[in-house]
Length: 158
Image (tube, rainbow, N blue to C red):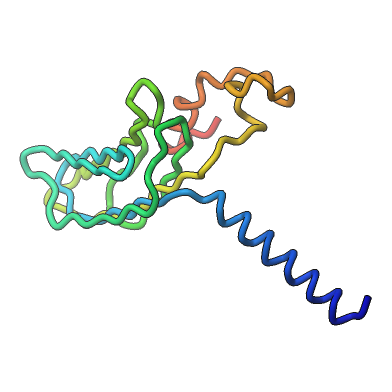
């Protein structure tokens, strides 16, 4: 085997590894808008619903890349702007028809421009999912995972 063929094989393997890692990422929601007081944003599949109080939400824009699956997945939140709190208040589960729910709270007078990104992965993490009964690596109880994630997103680290 020549050096050139070895390098070609290594490059091909690296490209396949990169492609397989990219497949794990299933979706992203990017949201921006002006919020005065409180807003609730719900993502169900590709459908987005936003509710605000009397002062409400203005100039909202969003982009959904990939549908939120109709099964339990873990969504992650990254705040990209705004002076108040942005937090996940519900992870997708069978109890909420696999809907991710984000709350924005702006406690100061007047509105502020907010932005956030939600991301989720395509599959389940077999290392931490005891709902997969054939998985012998993890026999732990994951029933409290949603509460732990909410605590994490509110800044209360366990």
